[in-house]
Amino acid sequence: MAGNQKEAMQCECMHVHQDMIEMVEEHMPQEEQLADLAEFFRVFGDTTRIRILYVLMCSEVCVCDIANLLGMTQSAISHQLRILKQMDLVKNRREGKTIFYSLADGHIKSILSQGLEHINE
Amino acid sequence: MAGNQKEAMQCECMHVHQDMIEMVEEHMPQEEQLADLAEFFRVFGDTTRIRILYVLMCSEVCVCDIANLLGMTQSAISHQLRILKQMDLVKNRREGKTIFYSLADGHIKSILSQGLEHINE
DNA sequence: TTTTCATATGAATATCTGTTCATGTGTTAT
DNA sequence: ATAACACATGAACAGATATTCATATGAAAA
Image 1 (cartoon, rainbow over the protein chains, first blue to last red):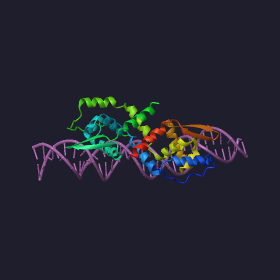
Image 2: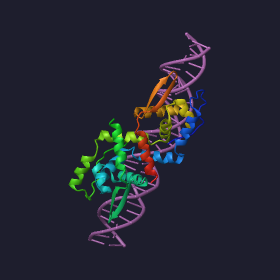
Image 3: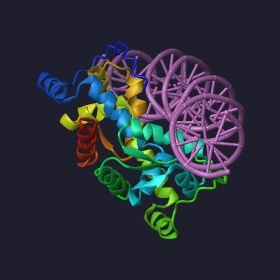
Image 4: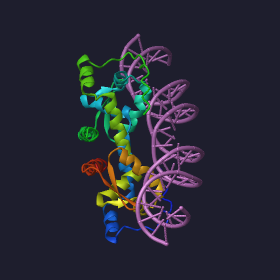
């Protein structure tokens, strides 16, 4: 993000009607919600994280297996799992030395599906 | 993206079962689809673009008015509209000197709604 | 044609992001 | 207690990204 919110240039054109301005301001979520929303979608904006989510859709899996499945280092996966967990997209449980990750939420699948729908026209 | 695809570390643990590997590889979309999907969601990962989309949900609006509504420069908005257009999220039409933007697709609203649903638990 | 207005765009820059590398933490086995 | 293993994490670095600034384009007005 970079929303500097500098004073807008003073432009002659003003096509906006007062009722439209009110409508926009009424429907626009709060600044904090907008930030949360962007942060949420940004999580899906990385192929590594998306691939992890697709793996977890199939099964509960440990970190090491995810790394092997995706051909990446354990550290890289671990960093990404941290982000997914902070966003409440995955949860984990310990079993001895191993930590198993799984999807935290059922409608993650439907969000990804909607994305696929769009890019496939 | 940064998927270097380096050789995974050779880890002793191998909890994956053969049928799980097959299931994952069967359900995992193609590399190109994954890249497109990430690119698609990355567009929603910025508050400026999300705010633009919320404005356009209310009404067809010209660039200058969006800039004024959001308190940002015309240039910044124009750059973001370009990204939204490339991703087929918005369309535009010219009317004299003015160019009006509007949502290209109805289910953009439902994608944003799903995002809000999630962050509101 | 020349000027003005609305928008688009390339380059530059500051900030953000993902991976790597080295190391720390927590658990089990010896 | 010590070693080995699975995973987490901080720092560093390279690559991506959003805004700004200056300028270009395209249409209407003078």
